Image (cartoon, rainbow, N blue to C red):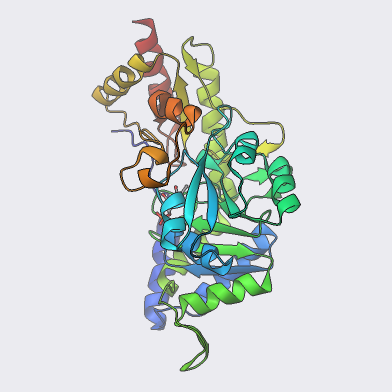
Length: 363
Ligand SMILES: Cc1ncc(COP(=O)(O)O)c(C=O)c1O
């Protein structure tokens, strides 16, 4: 079976975990702080605050940005559920904006139609590892003094005009889930240049403690462990080489599949660096998408659909959707298919996927 996504871990991660276990310091501590320091340097931001997963990173960032009762936050209609559910958890209302079909990221033009006087901010998702077009979004946000929160769960190391994503908006939220470009099994982080946002996340993740047993606010326990951070440090040090391997695989897919009619391959805009968390193709004929999926799976090639339902149609989110929402997101949900993409794929695996897809379209 060729897996669609898979963690890329080995002896180094094993040794790093063993070292933490031997040290006896398992909970949040020196390794977590080391990871925060190194990841902030990597991103070019002042602060990184780790938390237990990407969902909590989004939630904590939204709370730190002041989202509460009655606040609207514009989110792309095409993303993982947590991009919108965390707005609800923070007490706000998600407002769905459509996506651009070349990058699958939020459409600046559609954001403009969704702004009201209750809009508090915008969540931008760098979906599949391709950056959203940040300049027009920054212009919209700064004119209205609303925040930008970057959902970077799928985009560790991706760049917009040479700048790492997660360092562009008021805050960036990362996930270190098992199959992400940088994994800890589970984990998350908020990146920011703002001392206030960093401090608010710090309080929220650790029972509102300012000093030992001195609680200035009501908070949670969202702390990462040293065990997870030790895995993360190894992963961070090889992130660029893992992303380069993903980019190499993407190039091999482009060489092998670029000429197939009926298939549109992911693009990399001249202003962006794609880190291919997913390699998601667009199957022109929607009735063919599921046949291709079945065919590849019958050949032992696992594929994915990211995502089969736009957020405004999710049963738990429908109440937040106004009428006439997001035709591009609805179309995308019917046409997209993710092919295997992870650094552990061998050249033979990639060739096997290419020849199976080619065979399907010839047949
Ligand atoms: C775009 C996006 N946002 C948020 C999340 C949530 O991250 P986590 O699974 O670590 O809670 C994910 C993870 O799948 C994601 O892909």
